[in-house]
Structure formats: structure tokens, C-alpha cells
Image (cartoon, rainbow, N blue to C red):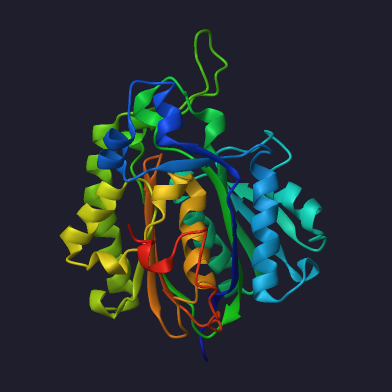
Length: 336
């Protein structure tokens, strides 16, 4: 009997119009463009005017159009986010109302920057078990809401955005996952509720510890998911990694001896969009026609918790024609 897998049927993404450049930040904190680019690879980030759910709904609509299905066909909506607009209702419930996915049951999932991978694995389990057939998975975060714009160590990093994917049952697709958590290290990246006296609801990060965690853990999770899928690293066409820091991505490529051309980047104009970063990047490459049917892809990331994860994905959807330009940046320049 053929095993059922979850495969991606369509993708979508949304980035706000408002740009915040390094030059803009230099007017607020003691920094400059060269310092930020050298340490992070970031040149600008986007800031939302309307919140997380609005961005998520825009990405969802794009994903449905790309998948060529209607919202009414969805059985489930999962939103991975750490920055919901309300304690309740959840972002997924708001998206359901916005797009008219009236048949779907909905919930949010919080795993910070690893959220999209955790949501993908959850959706895959629902599909493989036969509970749901078509699922919308969203990664969306408005990180600007929890960023202290006077803290040079964090305000240079984060931006807002949303990405989405429609999943359906198939004979191939998401072939393997590797997920993990190290709660003992959770104090190195936190955001309090701000309910205690003198407690502000801002991101607090031990940058050195998080960097060391990432450059050690991401190669390990990639190796494990490749072994689970019985793939060799050279079989993989692209490695879509969480866009946290260009130096982390370069370190992972060196450790695994992967050519950097196999590791797409959009961090220069997005910043770290948390749970949205992987699906935004995947959608950009999909819409540029840079992924072909049969391509083997690895998605991997890390985040607060501390959490990490990776997925092995065989791309089976039709090849997009490609428009030549994504986000106003020529494809041949997008990796740098």
C-alpha cells in the first residue's frame, strides 16, 4: 500500500510596503550601514502598518491562487506566529474569516522562528493520518511590535512579513522531518508579556549564545533529516534556511561543505521575519521559476525555545514560468 505524504500545492507571501533602512536606524541608535551589513547581511527590513493577521491573509490569498483552489476547499488552517494581534481569537481564525475558509478548523502554533517547520510537520501528520486533505500553513510575524528600537543589538535584525503554503495528500512531498528543543537554553532568547513592574514586552537576546547555538545545531538537524530521507547532501538543489543572519548561513554552508549558491538568501531586504522567513523565501524562488518538479529541497531553521527543525521536501508541483524579477531584485543578485 502506497504511503501518503503531504506535498506543497502552492505558495504565497507578503511583505509590507514600508521600508526601514540601515540609514534610518542610524538616526535612532549608534550604528551605521557598514556595521550592520558586515555583522548581519541586512540592508533594510519591512514594517507592517496593519498587524499580523492582515499580512497572513494576504499571503494566504496568494497561496490559494497559486494552488488553484478555493478557500472553501480547505480542511484546516494553521498559523505559526509569536506576534498575534490578540491573545484570542488566533491569527488562523482571523485568516479564516478574511478568506472565507468556512469549512476549516483553525489554530495557532508558537515556536518562534522555527514555527513554520513545526506547523508543516503538524499539517503533514494530519494529512498522513487522513484527518485532513487540504491544509493552509502560514508563517507570519510582526516583529516590529516586540522590538526595542533603542536596543542596537536587536533592532537591526527584525522585520515583518508573512508566507504561506497549501498542502495536499500525495505519493511524495514532505519526506522527513527533524525537530528538537533545548528548553534549558531558552533564557538566551526571550520576550516577556510586560505584565510585571518595569518589564517591557521586548525581545531580549544573548546574541553570542544564540549564534553559537545556531551554527552548531542547524548543520546537525540538516544531517539528521538527510539521513531520515536517505538523501545525500549533493542531491539537494536548494537549502532554504531561516533568514536570521548571513554569517550564520555562511557558517552552515562551510560546515556542511555546501556551495553557497545552493543556499538562497533574501535577508538583505527582509531582515529576520521569524516564522515567515522560510515560506517567504520559498515563495520567491517558486514564483521566479527557480524550482523544478523533482527537485529535492531542505528547509531548516532555529528559534526561541530554543527550538530547531528541518524538513526534506521533494518538489512535485508544476514549474512556475517565472517573472524574472522578485521583490524588485534581479534573480542573479538575490543570493547576495
